[in-house]
Length: 395
Image (cartoon, rainbow, N blue to C red):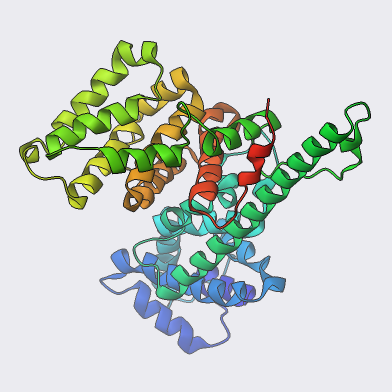
């Protein structure tokens, strides 16, 4: 199939069935080819990908299929009757390689190939795509994705998410067992007899333990993030939307360092909230206002849009508060309005797309945040219980 695919779409000649070549010529020379060919060729690729993905033993051919587009067409003796059609095909395929459809295909190969699990500070961010299943729907699908392809991506996402949660659970179990062993026999380091478990993240062990403690333990007084969110929703007495925004401001800034907040951030956050749907300040609070407010907050805190990918506030937060506090602030928003979780994911997909060609050594802050969000999502929205991690005191 790879040989036939290359003959048909890359070379444009020597395909066994001449009627198929003639059908392709009609497509490439049609008036709508400029607009529709990318969708057409993308669909042809996914017909193979969706079928091959159902057979694990031939997964490796999927990257081979996408790599075909990087090869140059073979030289051929131009047959006058098809000369124009062949040249037109080569132009359209060259344009396809620059399209969002092909970008999504390349990302899919990163997810399927498993190569990105290697720790190499010089690798492009794009090679880490597989590690973040919460980004798949935004990075692997395009406007013309079929139901079959959406199902394939959903299936891959569920598999990768399950594997990560199991690996995280095994790691936490190992940490607890080592702690318990050291408590039983403090003189002899019996924990060394326990078979070690690999860190399932790209964080250092110290940073992973800090993230687990942050997202599961007490972060403000005696409250966890989950408890803070529940307390806010249960006890806010706002009689109108305007008063609710004042309460929300207090909820969000309670975990921000006071000195940093006084400099500029708190004032900018307050203005952002005051300018949000200000014409509805006197209305009674409802779910629509909550969703709109939280989604606009995520624009402000992370990134506005793909067409305007400025993220100065996000960078400033990380530079002054660190990635953990910043991720925690975003988690506080999602926990009071779970409907904006896909919206937060979309913000990070925009950042991933923006930096995917950059080497990870230059964007350590983004890799750390992506890893931490993976952990936070698993703890608060996943299907694994690792609450027993609180049995040990991490350093």
